[in-house]
Each structure stands twice: as C-alpha cells, then as structure tokens.
Length: 358
Ligand SMILES: [Zn+2]
Image 1: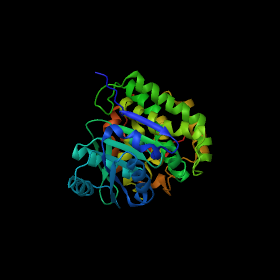
Image 2: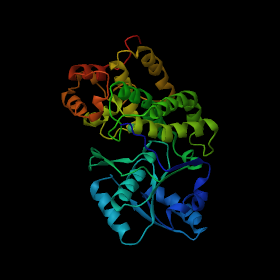
Image 3: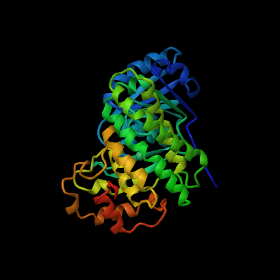
Image 4: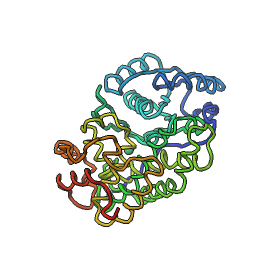
C-alpha cells in the first residue's frame, strides 16, 4: 500500500497572526497556546487580540528547559483542568513539538504556528522527546497531521538568520533520502510505501532551495519577507515536511541517532547534523558522485557544515566511532538505502565525507 498524509490546511503569508480569528474559526472558541516562555512573551498578546475579534479566548501554557515526557505530562494536566477546543503549538522547534505532544495526549485539534523556519515539524504528525541531557528518547506519532499550519512570514523573517540555516540544512536532504527510500522499496513515516507525489515534493523542495536559499538568507532577520524568503519558507516547512513524512528518510537522518554521542555534538542543531549527514549519505551512494561534488561546493555558500570538523569536532580521525556506528545501524531509516552498509564503511564515510573528486 502507498500512503500520503498532510495537514488539513496550510496558510502562509505576512502578518497572518492578525487574521487568526478567521483562520482558526473552524477549530473552536477556546485555545490553549503551548510555547516556551520567550515566544509567549511576544506572541500571547497578538494571539489574544486576534481571537478576541470573534469572541474567542486563549490561555497560555509555557515551559522552559528540555522537552521531556514529564514536561508533556505536566502541561497536559494543567490544560486538562479547563475545557479547550484546540491547541496552538507555537515556537521554533521545541514549542511546536510540545504542543503536538500535548494535543496528542489530550486528543485535541491542533494548529501549529512556527516562529522560525528551523524545522519541518509544523506540518508532520511526529514529534521528538528528549531526556534532561538533550538525548533523543523517541519519535512519537499523533494519530493525524496538524489540522492547521499557520506560517506568519513576518514573524519568521524577524527570527535570527541562523534558524533559517537549520531549516535549509534539514530540508536540502529530503530529495536524496526520499529517492533512496523509493529505490530500496523502503517505508515512509506511515510505515507504508511512498507515493510519487511525495517524491515530486521532495524534488521541488530541493529545486526551490537551490534557486532561493541564498537570497532568502540575505533577507532573514529583516522582518520583511521577500519572494525568495517566502519560497524558501514553503520549501523548508511544507515541501520538506510532506516530502519526508510521505516520502521516507534514509542515511542522513539515521545519523542523528548516533551523532549526539560524539563529544561536543550532544546539543548540535538538527539541521547542521543533516547537512553533514547528507554528505555521508552521498559518499556511500553508488551513483551520486556528480551531485555530491555539486552540493559539497554549495553548502558553504549557505553556511552549512559538511564534515565533523565543520561541526566543531577537533580530531575526527582519532575518534572511536564504534558505538556511534552501532546506534546509527539500529535506526530504521538505514533500511531505506540501496545496499547494506557495514560499520567500517559507515565510519570511513563519516570521517571523510568529501567527494573522491574534490
Ligand atoms: Zn529532519
């Protein structure tokens, strides 16, 4: 069976929070805003003002620190005390995932409202929880994708440019991962075969980023989104999200199961791990030499890491990566590859992900 999933509706544009009244009308009248304290500081008041236009209300539930199962249980218990019609999950990565986890636990409709284009989590049904040391404890799945995704590009264009870099790093790999999943008869995030639609979106994601990412990064931080920024945001949030969830992941993402065990990488940004992970994957692919060289030359232009040195690991050659390779080999996405990779092959590629021709 082939499966394709997506959010119920996706809105993207300038100043959309101001239109939250009309854009959330079908979700109900009592919202629970779940976000971290920093985002709550600038978002609670405009959300309140917008919802008040139709007599709807919002209560903010904030948190600080790592997104652990305990934290999710506490937030859900607080929210369950009063009746809510829907959850607004707002923030960079963590706030959105916190809201998703809470909506999942309480069975409430969900709107995601990203404040940075740093991941594609706003569109997907899965969320990641961590332990106190920021080690991933698991990837969890809501029963369905968010009902609504609200992407206010005025907010996103005010976020620090480095957050957009993270999003580009995460998204740029999707085409190559979905392609490997399809070739290997692998499974997507619904546990079934990918559709051609998902592959087409992953390809469009890549093409859009190659055309627009550099200009988008120039615009990032200005608060005033231009067309290149809008296109890049759509690629990093919508196309990348649909592309990976319905298209499947491969080695670039499998690496994130092991890389945090390398000293110094415990808290490395996901998007940085993925741009490096993509170089490892392309090194291991049989027929991707030309694409590997091309991307190897492009990544520095958008400030994305390609090697362990770029990630700040001082002496990769001297590292013992046996345990790291073991963790990576256990990741289910490793099966979505054209051939089985030995630990030794993986470690060699991780230590030297440069193209042979470079
Ligand atoms: Zn990712």
